[in-house]
Length: 261
Image 1: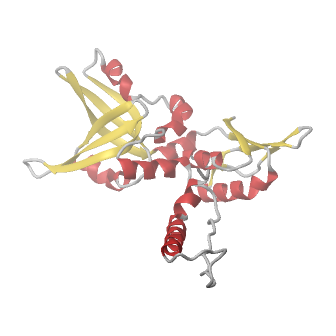
Image 2: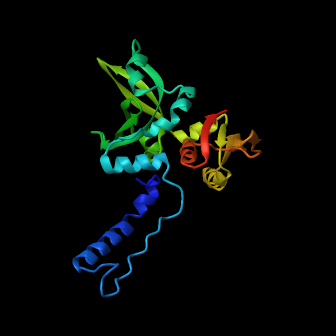
Image 3: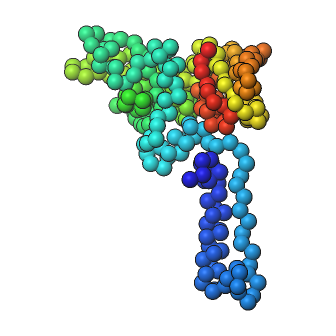
């Protein structure tokens, strides 16, 4: 299997065209080596240029095709950062709410289901189901909160959810208070990133990824393997260093290690 899934996917039409060409050749009993008539030229085949899909892109396409995340979860890339942000996982909810009627929590997840309804009084509200690495959780958004964050609910990125968990008999309900793009929160809190590089040819790819991610407040250091020594270079410019950027850097050939600093 070709290791660049994006190139393989974009080559599907070319592969089908070549398969159809050889099928027609076989049916007409023509041989590219011994036929009496000159054979038609096979369609040219060329892989597209560019980096592979990021892990986030692969998982999004996987979810669109299968309706679930199979190979990994979009929240995997944020695991160490979520610990710093003191995020509650879905499998910790019962423990966090135990013994309390109401408690405010911060959760993070990817939207997996969204349903908007209208109450008997004509007010709009919504049920939003999120998925994180440990399971699912559902948040109710009442009219004002729904109106305030409607655009965010259409985004594909992970969200940080501030919610009030309220006990209702033997169960509980999560009432949404605030939604934020998780990437933005991480970018504000990021302390910096170190990149270990084994091949200088990858610098152009790294430059393109950093440019797309944009400026921010976090420092970046390169640790370049020169064979006999590791050269450390601190960038003067500060970067956003989002989770998406981290995943993009993981797909770059020549980057051997990525670590928070």
